[in-house]
Length: 306
Image: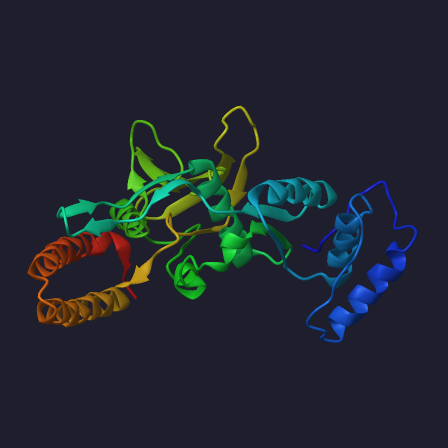
């Protein structure tokens, strides 16, 4: 789809000239441009016109969540038929891990994730990888990586009608994509099985994919909104299911990471012992071995086979 600006207003005053120059400079490869204007002068509307003329996926970065939310609502009203998404940090609270040698106190990392914002982040990445008419309104936290887009897309599962697969294989692949089986109260990032149907609750929190199988063959694929009060349902010939978590790692890279962690552990233990810090060395070894055991035991879930 192309960007289609919907607005009862038309550019006036200095806006037509600004739009023309911004678009021309963009097409000629100018890297940096600045649009000046006082509050309420229509800068967002001007940029919406630039997006419509340029027809390119657009990232809008805001200095904080509040302004990002305001811009998100404005761009959604300007482009109701296109993919406009909100991408900000999903932490309501974050406490980094710490160690106090004097009292031998280890403080574990603690965090509280906002599930609604997490679902919006997943909707953003899924749209970026599946369509061109995307506007992502983000805070500055978007500069921090959420993993490799190539690995995220490569780990996705593409299904099509009449494809041969078993229900067991489909369940196992969903688990490898970090979906959790939840038969009683499924929500975003979960799946459940009902007779010959596998229901996949997408991490975006917007849709459920019903995959119907008969005699080890996919007979139909239905997309429906999670809100059951909405009647919208769509039959699909194909569907691509993205991982339930942004941080997915191919198994070979997971093995390499574990080997590197072990090598770095030996180096750090040697440094601590040289500096006469046996307690810190013992705690570092204990904690790292625990983390490595967790990585190894959940490797089947967190690692994606090539």
